[in-house]
Every structure is written in structure tokens, then in C-alpha cells.
Image 1 (cartoon, rainbow, N blue to C red):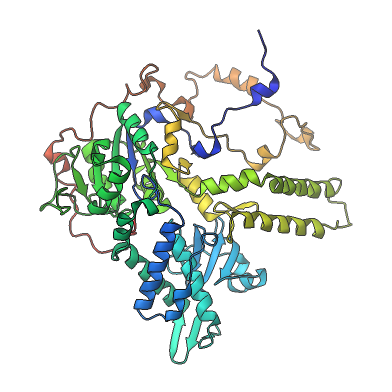
Image 2: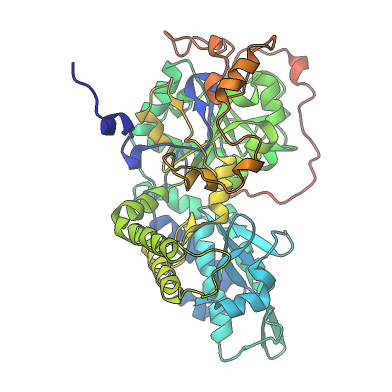
Length: 555
């Protein structure tokens, strides 16, 4: 009988990178009762850059309509410029790439990269706190055209001969006209909102589906697999019924509602996860809302409008960890569903395909960076507190800087979505914190069985990731330490004296009795989303008289 070699034992099987689902926190698929889906950029995948170009051009036209100069019509969207997760500073009109703590990694004013000295002048310690009065986070895929348009506008007014920069660097002046960078941003934001919410952009998309929408056969495969395995599925989108019906019919057919136990449109996330809105039924023949407030059970094949997560949970009797919600909006879909309801979360990151391509194709660049790290380690190898001669490391550090810049350029003008050089971005920190799973497409789930165990890799701290297990620990304070050796044997002896065995809340040890080895779907609740619910159980879940508030309704 052949014996597996050490290399074979060490090798871990991994699916093709483009088909994988990546794991931040372990999740057992068989423990998920309800699979929820956003629509835009999740079930519906828009073609890039065609969709961004459409939104960009229409936003430019809207700015011209409200009084901006005709000259801005020459602006053209370039997909290699913008990246998600950037911050726009209202005060100085800068686009900033920051880490998870607000430390500035890259700064840009218009199309000009800021020097370190310029960043330090405006931002002491190269740090900016995240406050609503100062910063707008360009976090969504809908923000990509907006990011590029903002850079264009700042550059346009800064370089225009009729305008001069203000001394405090907060805007420009042309005669008696003052244009603060904040007012430029607000005009741009208003134009973008108009395009998505009030213009005919959706009509253009619906009339040219092949140009703007991806037809993915995996849509029917995934939803059928989930239903056949006893899972409950629901659609939760901010789009109206008319647009939703057209989009879903394109990828699933006219019977698209049969793929979901429940359908909710006009959800107005993230408000849906808080106070919510009035819960009504949609007339699928006319697209109009039926009069009155819906208070009864949720029925399969019926489309509902608005509502709230509180009403949803009371009706379907779902615990937070019973639900996996899949969406592309880090705030509206993932963060709010995680923080307010405790749902398990799956973030769709379409840019991952490009990120992985660079990560694999440009492997030599990453290897060179590791070699430079090793060079720095060797330089300091024999130096300690008694050393007086400072080594010359400027050349190596400059090589590191140049290489990091070259790596960033492989991703785009503003670099990677997830990192700047060796440091991770604000967007990356949000993904790590709030997304249990993430992938380039929700349809990557078709490559996994319904009982799959998504197990997170062990998270190592620097003292673990940089110290090899083969290392021998030597300490000059050995005689001062009461314990410097492994005490596993002693601990095992000690625990035998206790009445009860220690229990730890490992993901791997979650309630195994609730899982059927033979039938992955056997443990699922027999209650369906459309089962009858006593009317008095939902009578107090209606939300009326909701005060107006900002809601990201572009999804």
C-alpha cells in the first residue's frame, strides 16, 4: 500500500480561484435555513464598463442641465481610474485611500497625486477620522462613475482660467462666484442620485438588456439546488417591481417568482434593517401597490413592497444565524444585516476576478518584495542595543517603495481595492469585519455541495506568523520565568480533577446533534416562509409615519 509523502499530506485541495468562495468566519451550509439575495450586482450582474459609462454620461448631462458649463461634456469615463472604498474629503476636495483606522495611504486632488508633505500639511499625522460632516465613503459599485466624475470636476475648476483657488484650499472663486469643494460634491451627488432614481437610465437598460446585463446560466442552477435541498429563498431588493420583473425575467424566465419563497421590492435598505417602511402587497399585473397595510402571512408567488427586518423575522420565525444574506453593498446589505439582525453574510465583490488575475500573473513582483524584506532582515541581523553604526538602508527602502508603486499600477490608477503596497485598505477591513463569506459572484456557490463546511483559515498574529515552528526559543530570562515550556500534559492532568469538561465555542463543534449525516436538509425547519401565521403575531409590526431620512435607494 502506497504511503502518502509529506508534500501530499501538506497539500490542501483548493478550487479554481475564480470559482472559489473565500471565508472570514466559518459557516456550515447545512445550518442555513434561509438564503436571501439582493438583485443589482448580485443576482443581476451588469456588464462593465458599459453600465458605468452610461451612468457617467447621464450624470454629466444632468450637471449641464442644472447649470454646469458645457465644457464638461468632454469628460469620458475610464474604468482603470476609479476603485471602491475611497473617501472624499468635503473640506479639501481630496480623494483618499485609507486603511481601516483612517490612516491615509494615498491622496489625490483631481488627477494630481498628493505628495507626502502636502498630505501632512492638510492631515496631521496623515490621519483623518471618519465623520459624516467631513467624509463621504464611495463604497458601492454605483459610486465608481461618481468617483471619476468628482476627480474630473475638481481638476476642471482648479485648472480653469476663470477660477482661482482659495487660500484655505477649500474651493475656487470666479469673480463673485464661490465654488467650495463641498458644493461641487453635493451637486455631483445630487446628479448621480437623479440619474439612478428619476431619470430614464433604467428604461435604457431594459431596452438594451444584452448590452448591459450578463446572462448567467448558473442563476437557475443555484436557486433550483437550494430549493431542492429544502432551503427557503427570498429576494430583497431596493429596485421597484417593474424593473425587478424585467431583470429577473431576463435571467430566470417569466416564472422567476417560482424560484423564491418570498419577494420584497422597494425595500429601502439600509432603512429596512432599522425602522423600515410601510409593508404592502404589489399588484403584479399593474406594478401598483395595493391599498392598505399588509398584516397577514407572507405567501409564495406574491410580491411585497417595503416592510422591515422586524416584521420579516416575526413572520418567518427566523433566528439571525438561520439566514445567509448575499449582496454587494458593504453597508446596505452586509454591515446592516450583520449588526442589526445577526445574519450570516456573503459579500459579492466582482472586482475579485481582476484582483486575483494580478495576484497570480504578477507573482514575481510579490516575490521581489519578499526578497527585499529578507534583505532588510539580514542588514539588521547582528545588530542590537549596543550597536552604534547605523546601516544604510535608504536604497533598499526606495526599492520597496518603487516596487509597491509598480504593484499598485498593475491594478489601476488608484491601485488595488484591498491594499496599497503592503497595507490593507478601509474596504478590506470592512470585508474582514462584516462579511462571513465573499466571492466574485454569488453563483460561485454552485461549485459547493449544500452541506459544505466553509472553514476559516487560522488567524495568526505576527508572533505566530513570523516564528517558524522549528525555531528554538532562547531567552536570557529563563531563570526568571515560572513557565516557559508547554504545559499541555499538566493541564490535561488538572482538568481531570474538575467535575465538568471544558467546552469551547469553536465553529467546528456547533451543535452536531442538529445535523443529519444522511440528509443535509433534514434538520431544516418544516416551517415555510409562506406558512400561515396568526394575525396577532404580526399586527404590531407595521411601520407608518416614518420620518424622512437619507436612504441609499440606488439598489
